[in-house]
Each structure stands twice: as C-alpha cells, then as structure tokens.
Length: 87
Image (spheres, rainbow, N blue to C red):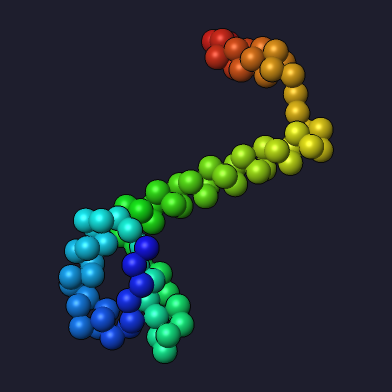
C-alpha cells in the first residue's frame, strides 16, 4: 500500500488516478503526517462492496442458524417445486 502526502495528490491528481486504475492498489493520503483518507480505483471499490454484501448475507444466515430460524432442505425443495408446477 502506498502512502503519499496530500500535497502530492494535489500536484499529481491525474497521475495518481491513472496509477490507481493500473495498479489496483489503494493509496493512503496523509495530512500533517497522519493518515486521513484512502483512495482506490472504482473496480476495486465495487469488488470490496460486493464482498461486504456477501459477508453480510453470510452473517445473517449464521444468525438464522443460531436462532433456529431454519427449515429442512427437503421442505424447501418441495415448496419450490410446487411453485413451479402450472396450476
């Protein structure tokens, strides 16, 4: 992960954006020696968001298992097949 001061970002914004897209590595921006922001390319951001969404679904599923909000697979399959049958 790269770390650059905000002055570098101000002076080299176009280059920074190009490097982000090419290297797909986040860039930490510092101000007065402290990390203040992280920049990343759009593709990486979207992949991160998709991963977080999947992790949330898994966590919710785990909560359902822990609290007993589950149904036997056979019951679910039977119900789904019944919905697919023409009436």
